[in-house]
Amino acid sequence: MPDGSVIEVEAFHFRQQKNSKRTRGKEMSLLVTDELAEALVAVEGPRVGTVLKMSFGEPYSKAGLVNRFRDWWREAGIPEGYSMHGLRKALGIDLVMRGVPARHIMDVLGHSKLSEVDTYAQGANARMLTTDALLMLQTNKKAMPKLRVLK
Image 1 (cartoon, rainbow, N blue to C red):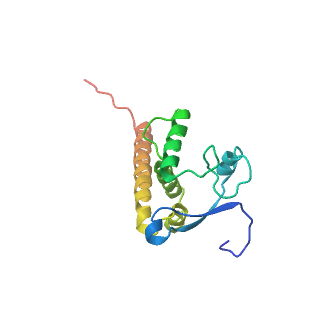
Image 2 (image 1 turned 90 degrees about the vertical axis):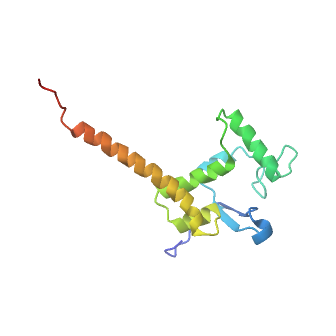
């Protein structure tokens, strides 16, 4: 840890496929969060290598995983229009809204440039600013005296 302490965590290590032909893909090591650990309870067998596999035990191709993910969305009753990339963007926005530094977000999402985090920062800032503005309006309206028209 930054303070020099050592903690033991469960994590998974992989090489990103994105840009792999140009850059060999970025090596990633991500913490298994409580939510992920809970979801992985349903995975049978050892959690070694590829976890999401087809029914015959082989890893999904990129296109196959995208299609399977779409099936999972439908089975869960989630409306059309959501994607795996949308989940990634939602994570980026959530991290910004929680005050996580841009460099951390860049590493979690596997970006190679800090400028790529701006997309998430802009989305989060727009949500926070509009929410804050409307809450101020709501609060100020309650505090304002009611006006009556006298003839």
